[in-house]
Image (tube, rainbow, N blue to C red; front, top):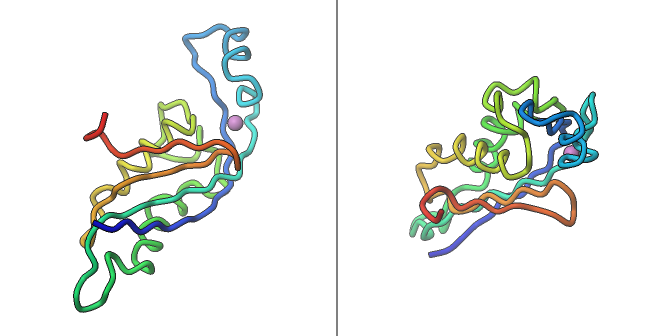
Length: 138
Ligand code: NI
């Protein structure tokens, strides 16, 4: 089995806020990300597909096709948007990097004819990221 990864970047704003918490709790728990009008992050998204190279092309998946799937399903919806307000598939979730990774996985998972979605790695800063391998490994 081989693993091939496409890396893309996007910028978006968010606010981390749970209405079940008091204002003080929200501020303590979510800190800068609780800013009332939101604030921005430059995200890096890495999408890894697993498979064997097709004997005729040598590809697990054509990277142009992988890029188009990521563009159509994720980037066109989230880039330069407010994740709490502008993105239909994120409605009702707290847009932490963890919850975003799960939501992105769910959007991408069924789009692959060649290879199989293996991992989503999502960086919220250069120094912190989450990895998600889908429900199967929970
Ligand atoms: Ni934040």
